[in-house]
Length: 328
Image 1: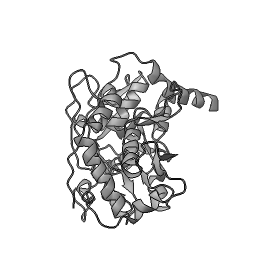
Image 2: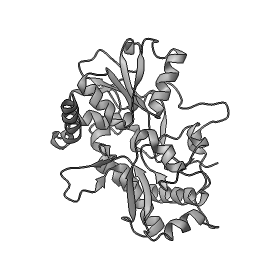
Image 3: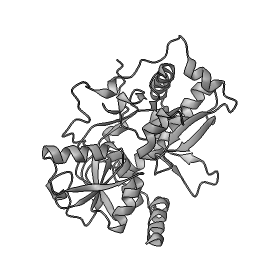
Image 4: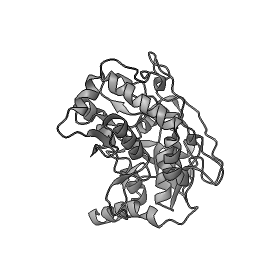
């Protein structure tokens, strides 16, 4: 079985390099348009509304203790937690002779490093599993996490977030031959995989409580890294995967035997996560994000990395437009 798993992982990582042009699918239902379907609002709580709008305004002067400490390091680099196996977000391309990480999130990290340290390559990347993103920040292992991390009400109590830099939603991924049609009754008696500590699992758990999902849906399969769900799907250990539609689109591009099922059923706003109290760093990142969007850097990165998997021909995904920033 270990050999089979190893082959499955290799298949998942190498397949995108051999896909023909035009194979990729967008974030809407397979074969349908790209209109986003929002059925529920992510992470509602009594004391929290619109968590994506709770960040600090961009820096405009004042003390900068966190940024100064980063600049004063002997090893003058930004330490950033990232994903290394999410195709087109943060991944290692075995065909890239430089061996450098690539992807949409990685481009953003380079821009932040350039703005803080004057050198886009002044970065020390640390691979952080989905389940350890918050812990790594709280323990000071990294300065920030840039890893398709959704801003929600529970998380803003534990870490500080930038303004959102991307918007997507949860979606179902399943084999093309599956009778599953989306986040609905067709998941009855099905095993669904999600990542530990992810909003996908939170939504699955809430869905069973409020009746959006059948009570017989088995959501007990969780993994440290989201890509592990694709491997389990390939091995037949689970019937479906629930994750962010942007990630699901990349996984559908990696494996021609799977596809997106149904529309997006939540709103997911990605933010850069940092330690609570590092207000000057949060403000600096927000200023970087504003400039990155305004000068076209964000759009160039989207076209390079995400357009092939998220857009369908000349029809743009709703995610192709950066979210507007609102500050508290």
